[in-house]
Length: 310
View 1 (cartoon, rainbow, N blue to C red):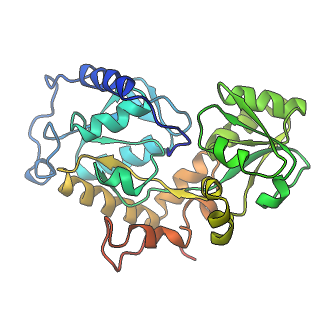
View 2: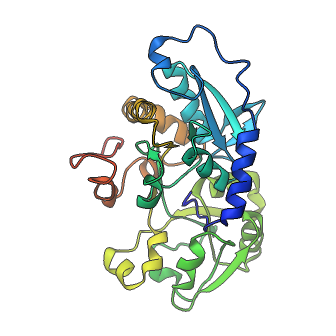
């Protein structure tokens, strides 16, 4: 996601790119009798969509050679509609982006955040969902705004962008951990007040570790004036995700975006978000700045982002 990740070194990116290239690159089992419509999508192997993913449950995981999780389910649904066979290739986040930008895979998925810089090196679909600013809190505690976070003990994972946001909150103390389990452990023990993590990670932990007695809350995004005063507060705002494709894959991107838009309309997207414990009201309604961010950049000036009924 802007995925809450910091930049990864160029050397590591190259190593991970090599990993992507080495995984599942053979086409011996390419499907036969691919329709002309499917072949016209321009995937690297006709009838196959090669997907770079990292294990990041419940967004993306590999089970029995298939991608599962929210992003995986969305792509599998779309691939079936387009007549494509999904072939995952496991890598890390840097490898996901590098695999697309070098066109060694057809697409990468898994909460990848749209950004003006990333779209210069690849294509983004319409947003399959919007990632809201989620907080893990102890049961019975309520925090709604950034002002409510002042002076608190705030936790997140080392290298995540929320580190910068937390450091900008007056009086707040940052607790950074190697992984999400550390955040949850200290939250349950009362050593931190709030944990900032991707929303479905928090929701999954609620189910898997009821002994922690934690709940999910959504932060009211800071205003434009607050972000102007403290730029790092931008990471407390929701962001739009996208499936990320090579610059050359214009036909495939348009076909996938059309299917994404249809899933908002026919209720499939809401059904999948709910399957993983998400609230469609939080995940499937864009913030006001989503359209303006992309209009005239990688979308027409009259583009309207997909949304469930208001």
